[in-house]
Amino acid sequence: MRDKKTENYYSKRAPEYEQIYFRDMPDRRKEIADEVDYIKELCAGKNVLDIACGSGYWTERISETASSIVACDISDEMLEIAKNKQYYCPVDFVRANLNQLPFESNSFDIVTLCFWFSHHPKQDYNNLFKNITDPIKPESPVKANCPLWLIDNNPPAEGSVNQTHHIDDHGNNFKKRFLDNKKEFIILKNYFEKDELMNIFSPYFEIKRLVYGKYYWSVMLNPIQ
Image 1 (tube, rainbow, N blue to C red):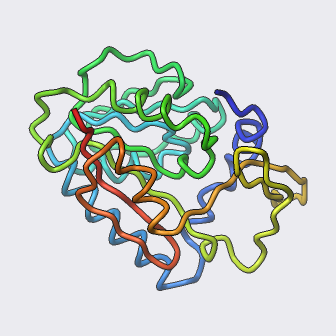
Image 2: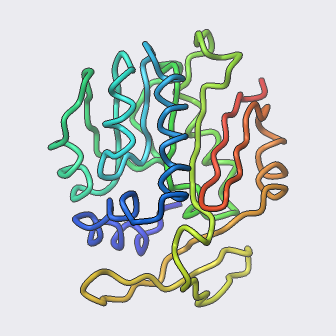
């Protein structure tokens, strides 16, 4: 299930996207820094698939410890920015829709999905979970420690304006977003309480670690065989 409106929004937003990581909010930036430290340790020496890599913020940091990375995104504009960063391990970039990933099954030790889950339609979680777990090696050396890591944001990370435009029949929240030039977009953007996340993931995964902060949440998952 492809969301063209969200795809278009992020393509247009690519040049200004990384502003979100550098706002002058120390407690907000600390939550991100803590997750950077965690995922770098987890990915040390591993072959990583970074799905929806965007501008490469997380790809760049993971590269400091990973053995290799394949980073994919649907947006050419995002990929162009990502390709021009400095990396510390081999990184291959692939333009790909996460609903039709062009990777063989059982190819990667760890899969990361950063700041996409909140944009994915609730009615399509079955397909999403199948698509992002299929590339994981069954014999992955981190299998017991969970080879799937997701991070996303809570409403306070977006500031004081979180205007809902509408909610569809599946319970998906749609909201207004604006670029620096004031151009308006309406995109799918869901937010979750901690208990909601546990209820969503637990039928499919063993939840090894769930961090639910003020600004961000992250989860480490092990697929249930």
